[in-house]
Image 1 (cartoon, one colour):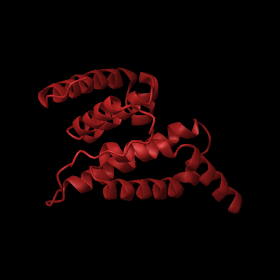
Image 2 (tube, rainbow, N blue to C red):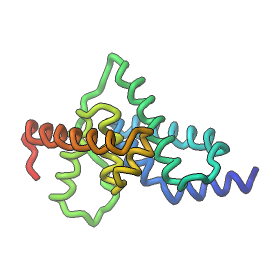
Image 3 (cartoon, helix red, strand yellow):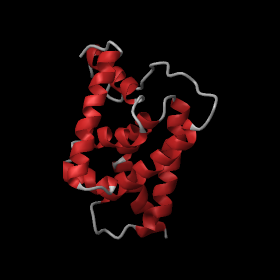
Image 4 (tube, rainbow, N blue to C red):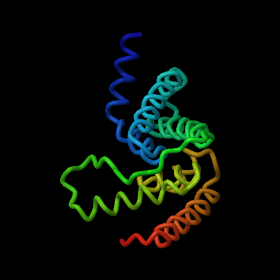
Length: 167
């Protein structure tokens, strides 16, 4: 059991940036992001015995993370009392210049207007996943992934323009 736990913790540590990015895409404030991060890790641990190595660990991890985020997002959106997004984004890379930080904040704000599936598509696209990998991670056909991704990118561009963000 200890070896399994150590292997799991090592894999989570190596790929924790994925969990952080998904948490930021699906939740607005820092506390909700931390809660989602913890929930994702918990769900990964519960599902870890089912990982048989038939795919890359990250492929399996994306599926569990995104499914957990979508479920939590749906639960969160049912709450009546919502706190408005204040625009604060924690930037991991402190070497980024101010202009890039501002653009990233615009992107995260615009992404908040997408639905859960669209957020998953954009996240996987930003992770440089191929259409085949996106389809595999979301359990849809490659053609469907390509069409949905193109529509989502168009919608995101519209949101960015509508809100007056400049890139």
